Image (cartoon, rainbow, N blue to C red; front, side, top):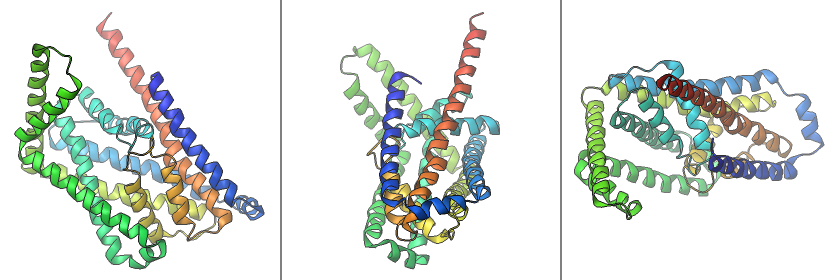
Length: 343
């Protein structure tokens, strides 16, 4: 991890810790201490294990989608790829830094860059489709839970549905018109390469056109000959989001509270959308404030602060630890590869 990454990680953690301290300051009391003595550690351990299972679903999604394009990845390589993605996501706004990491790791596994890009983008597309479907389902079936949380959350959901649908529409346009995507990418590249000479920029333009062709070819494979990869990817995407929502309920059970499965489902759906907004590194602070404001409608004040702290430990700080371990493994692998190429 370079100096810039360490700085952003520090900022992200400081944001999160500051908000958690404020939440605890307004919620902790004598009843909180009594509740801590009754914590069931087995449910809390189950929350950590369930979160790891969630990451396994993500790894299986990468593995099966890669296999459908003819590229074989080991499960543990895919899982390490997901863990490495977690650290990058924790230090970038909207958690967008994870995508380049996954593309790089796929490329290091001898997946062509166009195929790797297509796999990662299709992951995002499947996430978007799943969020739209889950939002529609929750609005139709879990109407009472939405009313409990408030009208503002319903408005946020409608705005987000429009945004996600717009992104999916834009993706479909670029997917069906690769020449338009080439022109758009070359135009963006010109903004960052104004000082380059003509020959160097032409080389970049040729590389962009080649990779867009590879990307389009991979998308065609997904739609035509690799539909199984999309189907399995969609299946594991569904398991990923459902599993992520269950984790909060396991923490509540560990604190001696009702699991709030349906309420947690709606709240985590809203939080997933909030955390897509590029406001803070890793959405730190945003997640804590959003979760505290919505769970306060269902939890006693004495439990709320402790719940938010444990919830973030499982879903954020634990992610950073997994990402650091993964990064060490990758650095060691790169060092060994460099040593073998330069005896």
